[in-house]
Image (tube, rainbow, N blue to C red; front, side, top):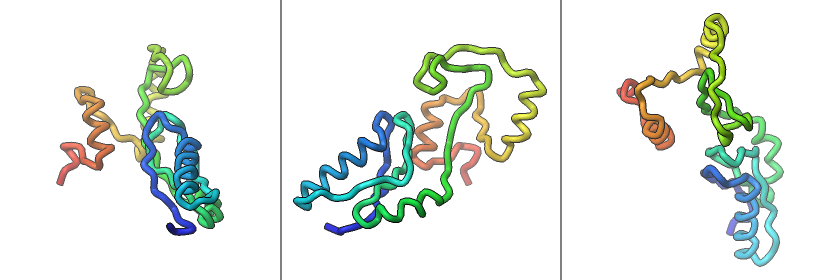
Length: 141
């Protein structure tokens, strides 16, 4: 077993970053017969999915450098809706739609970041395609 390294862990929803680190630490420590130092390079929310960099042994010292690497985030926002908890786990409540000039302002500022979904799309299918690295039908080459 290597003394140090970085594990690229595909964290599922419903699991905390701490849960992942504890699980990896327990397993590696059992295999090594001694306590193995394990950490991570950035917390993902429990409901978030994504690549968690799990650091083992001397690689934990590289954490401060890994934290500075660029990251990419993907989010879905629905104008005119809010939740009672302020996150995706809360109960959705229909709110007042922003005024037209506010929507235009956001559209201009976010133009380079927004991936517009077609209204007739099925969100689950779209999510599956994006999660599995597929392309949208209009983006296929």
